[in-house]
Image (cartoon, rainbow, N blue to C red; front, side):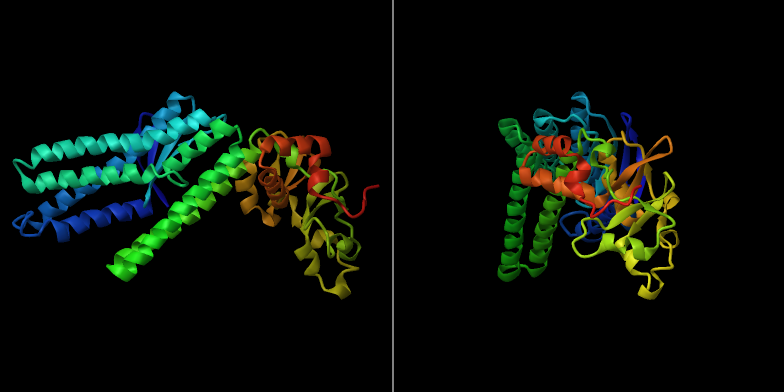
Length: 398
């Protein structure tokens, strides 16, 4: 769950509940364990320590937000809108509208965060060195915040996904080769290597020194490896779908079933070797819904000859309806939650085709295998998306 914090420079700031719990934990840890130590503030009351802990937590949260605002402002300066910034348990995310983003944009936007954190670290460390002369506890706290920003800068500068340095590496490789797919794959691989090194460091710590610290470090490394792969898949999907419309990935020559067809008469479409698990169902010329192999198989064999498709299909009003010339980028989130992982494509109420998650996945796999979205797109134009992605076993239209 995300909580709206406020808005700065037209950018809405949100905090995930994990971030709120994390910063609350930091405030309590300082108030209950660090500040009461004999050489810090042993005489301070609990309310005073809680107030100081809250200030420290806010400064750390502000440091993370500052890092993300740097990404946002550089993105805006390069013509990429940013309307929302979200803080998470392990950092944050400036939601950049990256349509039309090129390699130089990627380098500039990715570099902004670590540079901002580095600048903030310098300011806090310099202030801490000055303050420590008159108040050692206060100066040390400011120095700690400076070191936290330095750590944030160094960690995010690591050259691999999901760190900012991974975006910079991707931009450099992309700029050099002109191949965004290859650059993305290499940045993801670098991120996984870094993550596995961190996992190894955690394992060493568990054996050699501190088990708890080792578990934490190893878990962090494993999380980074998972994120590196998820970032890669998300970016590959974005690269593959940029510039396409729903019509480009719409299967338009699938067998067209009718609501009056019996389950027995259509079961051959879903046998062994069938390339489609979902087919459209029409009532006359209009879309009535869609039916899957699972729905067909759910009908007992002795009832298949008398059971109409209409009685087991998913009806059209339950499925998303899309215009053929809507950007294909909307498909992943739409199909992820759609019944049958499919959407009906219509124009002015007329059935155009069916677009399914399997169509999108196969096209993205093709982009990945070819290592070039332009080559895959050329294949779509030459072969037609429906013939590339689906091959009906027979035609029932008449």
